Amino acid sequence: MKKHIFIALVALGLVSTGCSDAELSDNYSDPNKIGETTVPKQFTGVLYANANYVLPNYGNYFIILRPTLLPWTQAAGWLNSLSQYKVGAATVDEQWNQYYSMLTQYRELQKVYNASSSEDQAKNEIFMLASTIYLYDHTQDMVDLFGYIPFTEAGMLSTNGGDYISSLPAYDSSTSLYTMMLDDLATIADQLNSISLDAVTATIFTNQDYVNHGDLSIWKKYCNSLRLRLLNRVSGTSEFASRASSEMATILSGSTYSVVDSNDENVQIEVVNVDSDINSKGFENGFGSDGWYTNFAGKLMVDHMVANTDPRLRVYFEEITGGGYAGIDPLADATAQQAAADAGQISLFNRSTFNLNQVFPGVIIDAAEVNFIKAEYYLRAGNDAMAKTAYETAIEQSVEWYFWVRSITNNTIAGAVTALGATEVSDYIAGSGIAWSGTAAEKLELIATQKWIHYGVVNLRESWAEQRRLDLPALSFMEDNSDVQSLPPVRWIYPDKERALNTENFSEVSSMDNMTTPIFWDVN
Image 1 (cartoon, rainbow, N blue to C red):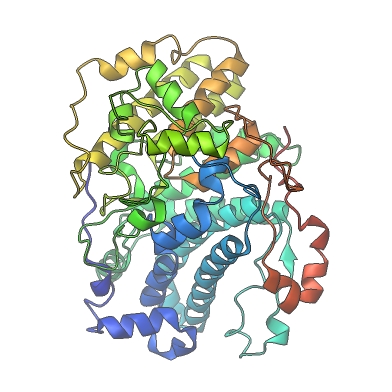
Image 2 (cartoon, rainbow, N blue to C red):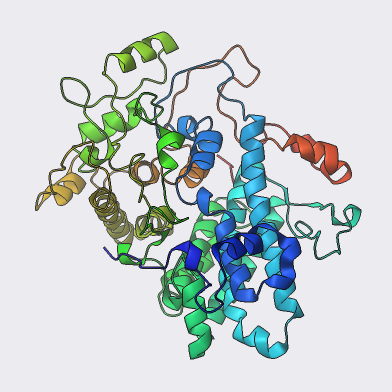
């Protein structure tokens, strides 16, 4: 497993400028100080603006994911409660604010880049290309949560000279944003295939890029892997089905484009110094901590892993009192759920792997996800042999990745882990509940279930999108008859401030401001 080596964020981009930590904070938190920044530094500002929503930290887990996607994907167990299927205002605001903070930084990057000379633009083109890939990755998340969002006119206050009224953004449709992202990413993929950096620019890019550390080959793979993700997401819609089929075939032909194909190529933020700004310390209180646990296992996932002797089980969960593994039953009442947890009869997520692991990486896109996407594409295309290979490879990569995460932990509270046996993974893949067999529908369920286990609590936005798209694996929930929202929603509502401050533009989407209008790709 490759370990990305990078300079702690307090030094990123400062090697060549000599700026202090305070100056970095000023440059990246206050766009009005645009005169003090540069294209390379502003590029890092885009990455840093949402770093704590890629790394598993407090705001992301406790405020956004804990009350919503953790239970709604059944990646984790939870105690049933009243109004548990509503998207709360604090959750919506946190998600909305972190995204538009990043988008504002991107607009400042555009502003600085566009104001530079043609010669400097040519040198700095890589910063624009890479930041656009990164931005579109998280823009997809926003579209998949909210549907229509402000984008093309958003984040323009500084560009518009501080004119607040003219900077109130209109909403872009979900389909137009997907079209824009797919068009632009295809263009960027071709640009990356032909780009070359001079020695100075390459060094600066390496110093500023704490995601892929200046590795152009990984940025190419990131771009094309993201294209696969978007195309697969819309592959079932009438608007995009043909495009998805043809473009995925072109990407996967390997003649022009490359994708993330091994764990050494994973796009993820790795922690090398827990005392730097890049750390996962907030995972503890965001997901669960000693004395107050929210990191209960869920019954469906535990039962599937136990029944099929999943090798990931021992690095994924901790045993209950008396041995074995068990998860919270989502159909039980809260009193019974709490009693089982209090009696030590519910497994916790392995604390040394997950919430007490301060070096847990921030996953962006990885090889297992890409191979699960490949498996689904080849299954649709009728290439069963290729689908089987991609499916089995993805499982192997998922197991490898989780054991790697456990191996790098700086916490040992959960005890030592038995190493993988020589045939353990192959035996698992050959097992009756996992082996590639059955009808096309049954094989799709195999892919979806394994992807769900792999995403787990790590990539919840993608997991929830995939579950809404496929309705797989089948999840059962206790109905909340105390509220009009009796089951998990299919989209999020908009923040209150949009109604109050962007009233005219909001009125155009107000009919979709509910939790029951599906996103356009949710056609099942």
